[in-house]
Image 1 (tube, one colour):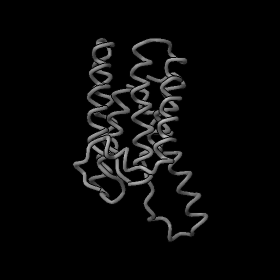
Image 2: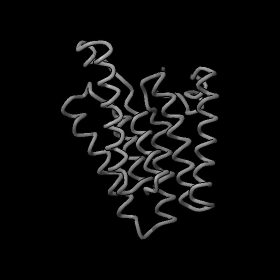
Image 3: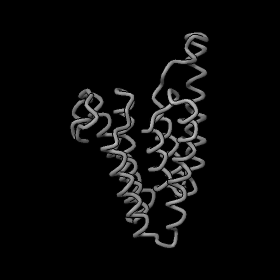
Image 4: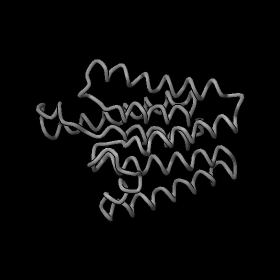
Length: 184
């Protein structure tokens, strides 16, 4: 797929079933943010984050790609909203985004085939949205990915150790879990 496609083109490239599932999941999770956090800035940021994470998960599962045209604008919007609504936490939002990105960027430098830059940028988005709670989201994502990796190896044998799996959905899962359990 052409990396210069628009966000809408990436969504349209999904199967119809994935489009419907992502749309329904996004609506349910965004609504869940307002039910959980009330009509608030936290709910608005959470709703944006949940919709973006659902769309990115669908794309990553089908294309093994986290498009910059979705991740980077979402990162910008979330960071701007966080800074506008919670200026007293500005250092936290910025440092969490940078630290989360750096956490995945270093292994990318060591073993580039192990993950993509999209995962690094997604981690930055999670840091901007969750602040210091991004650490818990990353741990959850890593544990979930590790568990699935063990299942794949158990099912397909040791030769499956190098099998590529989309990591974005695991980061999204960690981010959603931490968001709804009260993380920032």
